[in-house]
Figure 1 (cartoon, rainbow, N blue to C red):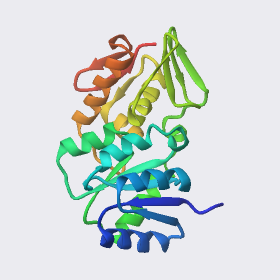
Figure 2: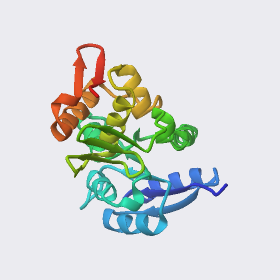
Figure 3: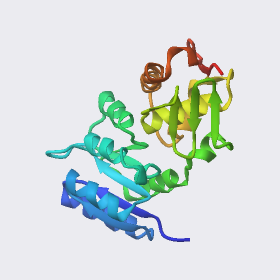
Figure 4: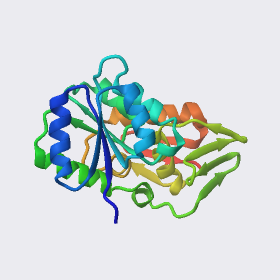
Amino acid sequence: MRSKKILIIDDEEDILEFLSYNLSKEEYVIETSTNGPDAILKAQDFAPDLIILDVMMPGMDGIEVCSILRENADLKNTLIVFLTARSESFTEISAFDSGGDDFINKPIKPNVLKSRIKAILRRHFNNQIGIQSEKLEFGDLVIDFDRMQVIKKEKVIKLAKKEFELLALLASKPEKVFKRKNIMKKVWGSEIIVGDRTIDVHIRKLREKIGKEYIDTYKGVGYKFIG
């Protein structure tokens, strides 16, 4: 089995050195970058399995970098983990909305870092939500898992990665009410804590994009997909 490739993006050289040193000891193949434009080019050439991305960088910040990376079809399955010293909720929501998969706060101890990265790499989208078929169709709405696309009335609807995963989870079992804690675990994983607002924001955006008629709210409990 080949070693996993990790691209680390941070404008602080000491952070790059710390992360590179500790993760290279785990036999990951490491590449680094100190700014957004360079990182975007390296990501295309390096084709990493996982990207560790600092939020606060001069010029092009991590949120913008993540959004651009998610436009690249070749990187659609690349995991993106945000690294930041900030803990405000709006930063976390923006990170997930731009297509991030996880969130690590600075400072972080080496053993904790290694454990988090291993756990993130273990997670696989199809295993998480238990989807076996390549497509699900609900009238004019088609969910294509191979392409990670949603099509409505023959038009592709652009979804962020977490929006797609949330929709896929709900649509995997139409008419089932998914409780909030189960949504958090299956879409965001048990290694990261997200608040109710994060789920609500993603549900609101899904309704705006695919239509309100597909998702029911069970106040205080969770959500259900109407098939």
